[in-house]
Image (cartoon, rainbow, N blue to C red; front, side, top):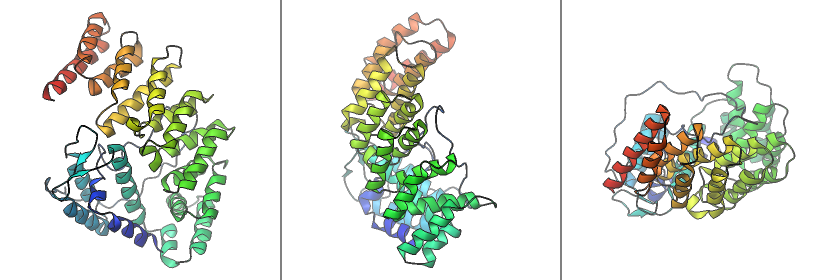
Length: 394
C-alpha cells in the first residue's frame, strides 16, 4: 500500500466530528512541538521538509460546517496547499470552547466530545501524515513501488540505516524512519527500538520520534519500558520526549501517569525536564498524578530551580492548548508567588496572568506592593490587567 493512498484513506476516513477535532492549536500546524530545557538529550535532525512556494492567503468562511471543512482539507491534500490547512485550523480554533473543555462544532453537528488535548493530537497527526504523504523521495517511492509490506520494511530499513552523504539524504532517512513506524510491523518496531541506542544521537532521536508518532500501542510500550528501565539517562530522556507524540498521553492515560512518575523520581534532571515538557500535552483534568507532579515540583522550595520553572512552563503550554488550567494548579501558582524570586517569580506571574481567576487579583496586587524590581512590577501589572479583563468578560 503506497503512502499517499494510506494517508488519503486516513483523511477521508475521518468523519465530520473527526475534522472538527483538529482544533486546538495556537499558531501553525508545525509549531510548538514538545520542548524541554536542553540538559541531557535534545539533538534532533535539523531538517525541514521541502515546501512549495508561498501561496496567496486562503480565507475560509468562519461559519462553514464540518463537512465543508472536511472538503477543504481533502482539496488541500491534493494541492499540497498548507495555507489551506492552516486556514481550516484558524476556523476551528476560533470556535468557542464550552466550560468542560469541549469545542463547538459547525452547524453540521452539535458539540464534539473530548478534550482539546485530544483534538490537538488528532490535528497534529493528520497534518504529519499529510506532510509525509506529500514528499517525493526514495523513501516515499518505496511505498508506491511495492505493496509487499515485507519488501517495504526491508527497503526502508536500508534507507534509514544508510549514511547521510549527499544533499537530501537526511530527509530520506527521516521519512524512512517515519514510514517504518507507520508500517507497525514487528521487525520495523524492533529496528527502531534497537536504534534508540545508536551511537549517532541524531539517528537515535529520530528512531524515538518515529516510535512516538507511529500510533502503534506496542511502540509506545517500548518507549515506556525505556523510560522506566534503561540505565542510560540520555535514552530515558529521548523516550520521555517521544512519548509526547502519543495518543494515550493526550487522553490522560497510563503514559501520563508514568511521565509524572519520571518527573518526580528519576535521578537525572534532563529526564525529569523532558517528562515535564511532555506532560503539557496530557489531559490534566483526567490525570490526578500528572496534576500532583506539576504542583508538588513547583511548590518544593528545595527542588532544583530549573525543574520548578519547567513545571510552570508545562502549565503554560498546557493552558495554551486546553484554553484552561485545572483550578488546583492555579491555586498552586498563587501559593508560590509571594515567596518566589528571580526568573521563577516572573514565570509564575505570567502563568497567573494567563490562567488566574478573580481570587488571583488581590494576590497579584499584594505581590506588586512588595515588588521592588521594575521588571517584576511590570509583569505583575500586566497580569493584574489581564486577569481583571478576563474575569469581567466571563
